[in-house]
Image: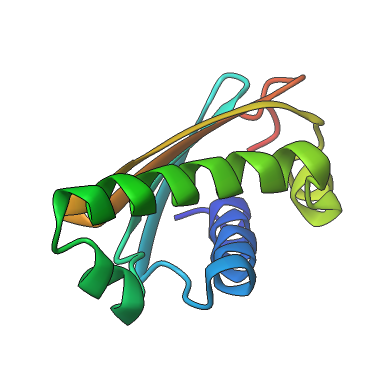
Length: 117
């Protein structure tokens, strides 16, 4: 894993920990063109694990996590992330698979991230 990807993952882990009280246990990121595609495993807190025992709870946790992540990056993209990759974040697409405790985020930047790696 490149140093840049490792640092990118550390930024994401810290942000998620600050937002939810627990960061992902494992993160995999690849840079493709102007995108950083990130898979995050082991995200759920003990409280969320309890809540998802019902179908209503699963929907609530999915909605809350997805909307919180999108809102967090929309209003306050971490400067250190943009500085690290040398590009401005333009869009974020994210989803969460509750049953597998796996999230996927696709960060789209205004420049190619593969150049200079």
